[in-house]
Image (cartoon, rainbow, N blue to C red):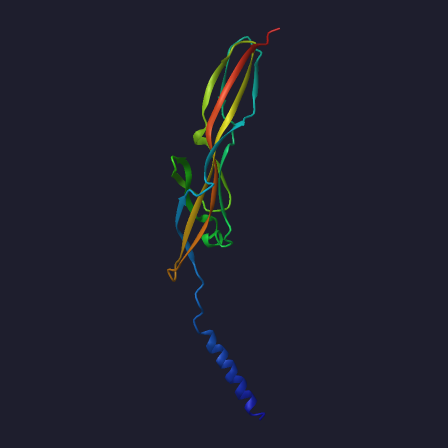
Length: 196
């Protein structure tokens, strides 16, 4: 019996090594292949006006001066993908996947723009909508400048499709995309004499 023990032990180890050579099932490697947008009940666009920071500029010199007005710096549009599917963002291979996102809703039609990251929140510059103009301030005068920001707030339904690079199998995830996009501003100003 003692002589059989080493033989049985060797046979067991050989069998275990042989199992290591067997092919393991492949781990799915999904890539995002498409994203589609639609309007469902409760989706759509709403416009909102937000007060910008007022500005007061004094010209206490004997010469005219020019003040260049522009929308507040650092304005950021927002893109937010929401999903109840816990795998919705894990399948997207991290932060490198970009997809077209809605830019406008007109008469029930969704228009998209260049890609933003498919992730739960992205902020990106709104400088393409920022406008500037100039106002001449006479000597010894005060300029009071006020403006309002115009934003479109959108909610859209999306369905995103992932494909396994190895097996070709597909998975879909549905959710809501929410965006806040800057549409320019409305301004007004008042000039008053400050000369004593």
